[in-house]
Every structure is written in C-alpha cells, then in structure tokens.
Amino acid sequence: MQGACVTKSAGMRDVALLAGVSVGTVSNVLNRPDAVAPGTRARVQAAIAELGFVRSESARLLRAGSSQVLALLALDLAEPFFIGVLRGAEQAARAAGFGVLVMDSASSAATEATHLAMLAQQRVRGVLVTPADVSGTTLAEFARARIPYVLVDRDIPGGIGCQVLVDDVAGGAMAVAHLIAAGHRRIAYAAGPLESPQYRDRLEGARSAVAEAGRGVELVVLPGTRADVSAGRDAAERMLGLAELPTGVFCGNDLIALGMLQGLFAAGVAVPRDVAIVGYDDLEVAAGAVVPLTSIRRPATRVGIAAAEILVEESGAAAGQHVHRELVFQPELVVRASSLPGPRPGLPSPRPS
View 1 (tube, rainbow, N blue to C red):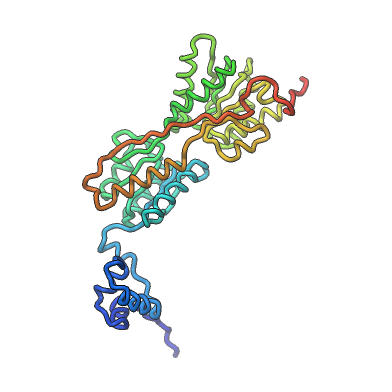
View 2 (cartoon, rainbow, N blue to C red; view 1 turned 135 degrees about the vertical axis):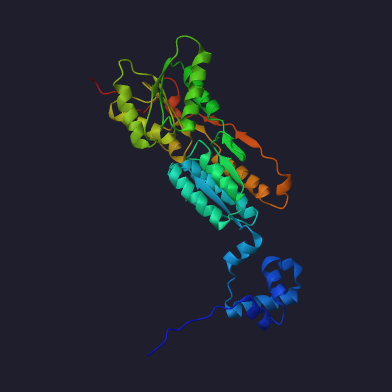
C-alpha cells in the first residue's frame, strides 16, 4: 500500500541552521533587514531561497497585531467614482509599503457587516469605508475591534473616525446655477435613489441655487430607483411626458446623464438646443459622448490618496497623537457642449410631430 507523500515546509529554524545564524537574525532579515550586516543578510536570503521558505503571515499577525494591508470597503464598485478612490488609495498605500484589499458592500448593510467582521478577524491595518448602514450601527460594532477607519464620501451620525468627503451640496448648486446663468427657468433634477445621502445633498444644492435665483425659476424633481444609464432613459421618458418640458436637466451622475441624452435623442429632442444637460462625476465617457457632457468633477483620486494617507498615519507609530479630522474637497464645473446656449452645429433636430 502506497502512503501519501507529505512535504514538510521549511521553518525559520531550518533557515537559521543552514545560514549558521540565530533565529532572531532570520527574523531581523525578514522584518528589519537594515539592522543586519550585508554579508549575514545575503547568507540568510540565500538559505531562504534554497529552502523555499515562506513565512507565515498569520503567525506574524499574531505577534504584530496588525497587517501591512489596508482595506477599501466600497459602496458600489460599479460606480466609477470608487475606481478613482481605489486608484488614489493604492498610490498612497504603495508609497507607505502597504497593499490594499478591496471589498464591495453593494449598498447592503448586511453585506457591509459581514465584510467588516471578516476584516476585523484578519486584523487589517485599517479600513477606508463608504457606509451602507448610514445609521452608524455597523461601524460602531466594528470600532470595538480597535481597527482605525476613515469614512469616504459619506458622513454618519456619531461617527468617531476621520472623514474625507466631497461637498455634494456645493456641486448640486454649481450645476443648477450654471443652467440658470445660461437662461433656463424650468430645470429638472434627474436623481439617483434619494435614499442615498449623495443624491439628497445634490438636491439640496440644486434647491439652494433655485432659491438664490429668486422667483421665476422652477425645479422639477424626477426621483430614481437606480443610478445607471437605463435610469437616465427612464427619467427622459418621464420628463417628456410632463405638460411643460424643462429646458435644462441636472442629472445625479454621468451615467444618468448619458441615459437622458439617449432618451432625448431617440425622441428627436436636440441637446443642447432644446434641452441642456449637466451630469455629475466627470467620467471619461462624459467627454466622449455624442454630445460631450458638461459635468461636475469630483476629485476621486485625490480623495483616495488623502483617505489612505490619514489611515496610514492613524495606524502608525504615532497613532497615540492622532487627532480625528474632516477633509472636504470641493467639486469643479467642467463645461462642454451639452449645456452651451444656442443651437449647436451638427446636432440632431427634433422630428416633426
């Protein structure tokens, strides 16, 4: 009867024996190589290569109490904004010698709780999180693990961590003020789900711009249940059914704006001659649309860099002196053809009714 072949992996003692050094020296080569003389370090590294030694990360975590990994728990990785945040977070983490583990709550509080519990068990160094549970209950439970976290693009009641936010109220006001300045007096807001604080904040900003303009300007709110291209087409259909068609539309994000553009184009409504459109996020596809979209740019990469840098600081050697703080980035209006006043050459004209 043949027995199973079992290969025993090499340990630190085996490396130390082959290199002729102590186990402590092997540990220093792995964790503090600058503290070991170059010749000794070379012998240990050669022994590691010869034996195929791979250190146990779980054992190291038990000793150190945390890892070299930050986590990003995004609200919805289908939203390009979070890809920009991830790009920035990875840049900052890499500069500090860390990696980034990415998770997606899919806007589910239950999924968020499961992911946070897993991250606590793995003793990640810290978490960048856009909370799905806006009550703060899930994060309050996670805080018991004493792992630092930074809120990204979403505030919660009673939050005890640092926050890196974008001023979406200012962004909404900026978008609608631009349409008002172009002469529009009946403006629609094609929102994403108003349960989301971001879309509510943009609505608050839109209303403030209307109030600032005074009498004679009207805002029509078209709530949505999604925030994708199909939601924009649906909003266009509902808007076209209104007794009086708005001449300007502020869309909750660029995907909604693209769907709005498609819906209006299919109905023979010219953009921007008949209806002007402003999106939000300034995705790459906004500039490349058949009618390039005016949009509100959120500095996603800068948000990711700042949030990760704060997390590295809070989880580092000077964590005891860390003071929680809030950083708020301002959005920027990027004007393109979709909101420029007057007829635009080469754009489709309405079909005769």
